[in-house]
Length: 466
Image (cartoon, rainbow, N blue to C red):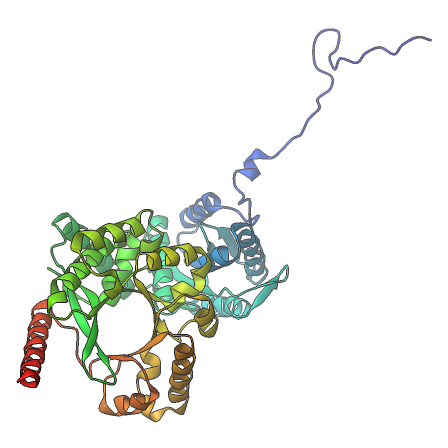
């Protein structure tokens, strides 16, 4: 039997007669986001600039969307699950847009929408549809998640003269939406721009402060008082910053900027050292006085920070049993698993842990079970006006009873009036902190008070001896 001729794929003259393989559209691939399937930010930029150049008389709006607290989903589950949520979110956004709008995938958890010729009321209507779709608990592959949507809007030509300025304006508006509580829309205004310029200026001045050996940063201390004796049991170290041309900037403004800029690690180390040093310095006047120091999640996750804490304790000779580190309940609740081994290392150093702002998180009672807290600080939201709220009074009584059952101390924050104190007094709260017993004080005032208390105690001891 004869054999079939072997097919080489080439004609006798050497030219190919057969191609085998895969053909892919590299042009489309380079323009499409691999997770969501949406066009990426390169196409977003090209299309926006095309619309601006070809239809300069038509208003063009950017709606910049951001998934709120999306990082919590990645932390709680994993990144692959987070990618699926991004894909589902992209599909949901795309399905709810009108024909004159197109959505694109930007960086991280953000999406950009381009809309030509839309009026503010129409933009508000589009966002309201999106907000309603996202403002509910979802289930994917048996896992529950909740992720709302914030939006910043900017329109050409009223808010910007070109695409780059338009993107900045929309981004600033989105930042403002998140600062104002998330799950909302903000339209760009000149006031938003002014606040952004102020924030950038403060960041630069704080960076200058760090270079100048932390000039402008200082600590104040707020007393924590025993309910039974009325005596100081501890102090909370509170960071302050004062530098021209801004003057004294409130901590709820400059601390988020420290975190945003990454400077919180440097300043946080400085704060921890200064507070430990003062605790050691004042030990002769008040041997049992504790010092509470606030820590952020970023500080704890910084490589080597726990080692730095140990070195600081050794260098300052501060008694670790008198140092309390505070973290907010919301941070602990969202990252409990990743922080577990760090909490153990903190306890191994001999320090105690306080859960701050308790009651404002989404899993308070579960945190009492999981979190190795030594102290729970009930948020001022439950203390303010407790004398006129049966719910707040019952909540505090309930938490005190549970905490004491498992040997956790309780501190009530934000006590400002005699009426509030009289309600809290019979509840067996261990400590009270607030303006009623003392506002934050500078170290000279703290030292004067401690010396006075020491002199009184010595006088009483002398009279007893006599």
